[in-house]
Length: 105
Image 1 (cartoon, rainbow, N blue to C red):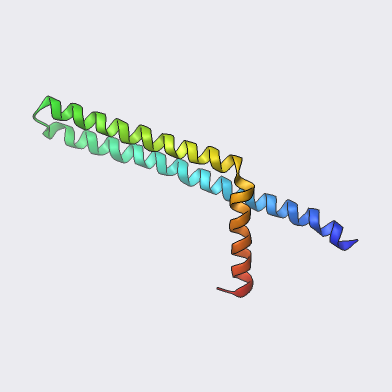
Image 2 (image 1 turned 30 degrees about the vertical axis):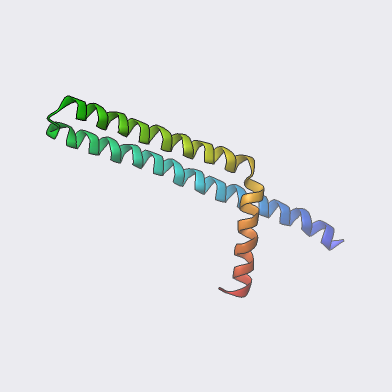
C-alpha cells in the first residue's frame, strides 16, 4: 500500500521541481534577452557620433537589428520547445542530478 501512495507523492514533487527549473530558466533567458538588447543598443548609440559616413551607420543599424531580432526569436523558440517537452528535458536532468547527489559527486 505504501508504494502506491508514495508514487503520486513522488510525481507531484518531481512535477514541482520541473516547474521550478523551467521558471528559473525562463527568468534567466528573459534577463539575458533584456541585457542583450540594452548592451547592443548602448553600443550602437555610443558609437553613433563617431560614424562619419551615413552608409556605415545604416549598415551598423541593420546589423544590430538583425542580431537582436534573430537572437530574440531563437530564444523564444527555445522557450516554447522547453515548455512543450519540459517533463522530458527537466525530468532527465533531475534524474541525473539526484543520481549524482546519491553518489556525492
